[in-house]
Each structure stands twice: as C-alpha cells, then as structure tokens.
Image: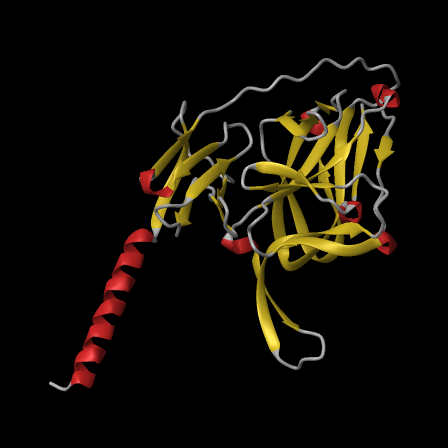
Length: 294
C-alpha cells in the first residue's frame, strides 16, 4: 500500500470519527413541555438556546424538536409559568414547568361606560424601518407606557395596535404584559397567551383584549411583542445586495414591526439570553397604540 493511500485512509477515518463525535454532541430530540400540576401539554413555549442565535416554540401539543448541543443551556419561557433554564444533556423527552399566580390591583371606575382614551400613534409616514427576528437571537421586544392620572377614567386595556410587515398570509405573534420594575419589564400581569395575527403585506394589526378586563398598572406598563418560532412563521425572503445582481435568501420569523424615525418615543427593550436590555438608540422604538376603555 502506497504512503499516499495510507494518508488518505487516515484522513477519512479522522473525518468519520469527528462526524460521529459531533453527532453525539448535537442530536435531534423530540421534547414535550407539560404543566407540573395538571400534566397537560403547554403550547407556545419559547425555548431559547442561550448565547446562540437559535430558538424554538412548542406546538399545540406542547412539543418541539431540539438540535441543541449537549453543552447548550436552554431557557424555557411562557406566560403563566416560571421560566426555567436547563442543560441540554439533562433533558429527556419531557419537561415540566411550574405554574405561577398573578394579582391584579383594584381600579375605581369614575366615568360613563363607553369612554375611550388613546396612547401612542401609528403612522406609516413616521416609519423609519422594521424590527424583525431573522436570527432567533431575540425572541421578544417591549415598549414602555407611563401611567397618567387621567387613565383612572378609562382604566382597562381595550385594544393594542401595531404596524406589521409580513411575508406570510397569517403570521402569528404573542403579546406579553408586564408592570414596571425600576424602568425594566417586571412581573407579568396576565397569565394567558394573547395571540395576534398579521396578514400579508404592510398592515395595521389590531389585537382586541377588551373582554380580558386587564387594568393599566399604576407603576407603568410594558407591552412586549414575542415572536413565535414555529416553522409556519418562517419565511424565505430573496434579496440582492446593493450594486450586486446575485440573489440571496434569508430566513425570518414573521412578522416585522414598524419603528419610528426619530427618538422621541421612549425606546425599546430587547430580551436576550434571559435578560432585558434597552436599545441605546431611542429611534428603535416600535410603533404601538393602546386603546383604553371601561
């Protein structure tokens, strides 16, 4: 056997050993997420691989497929349950999350039924760009709204409106509501998913929550938009770089949300690796309007 052939065989064997070792460290797992108390499946759980641009979302049966490495840490987060971080190599085929309770403060209604107030504004001419989640690194963003005494006359959240851009017919997203904790999103004030649907194209997307009777917190309100990382929400978008004729494809979790051009709207908070961070650039505030009512 020639020396050249022996070297080639060694290289092939090394490659096979490397591939085998890599496959052991990074394997496909079908995992279910369940309520610790009722043992029922939990849908819409966002699972973020910490420190990486990877995220998953459990389906209606509470299931998702993970391709994480054994050394990865996975953060499980969903409305109504305690957030949990687990090492991938400790996860079997089932995860159980503990439910948490919420308290809502009393509100005194002082005006006639039917009155409304509007906070914020939506305007296409004010849109500078769109905030998207093409990577999975950030799974939710939030905007802050300060409490005003005049809200006592219309204490309940009636409707939330955003400007969306979607490359899919019906892209779904989740809304989370937090109180203000030292100018950061604090505890959640509602324990159920609030699902919005963005139709294809540029739209004013409205989410009606009047029936939920959620009061505006006196300490202030953070409204968070959470991308749902379902396969059905992923769009393949073709684009060209400036000055190039070559077409590229990028993948994005839909929809995207319109931002303001200027920095006069309070800023946006970004949730990465289990922590909230405020964008340094206030121009990155996303457009949102809240309707308050009785």
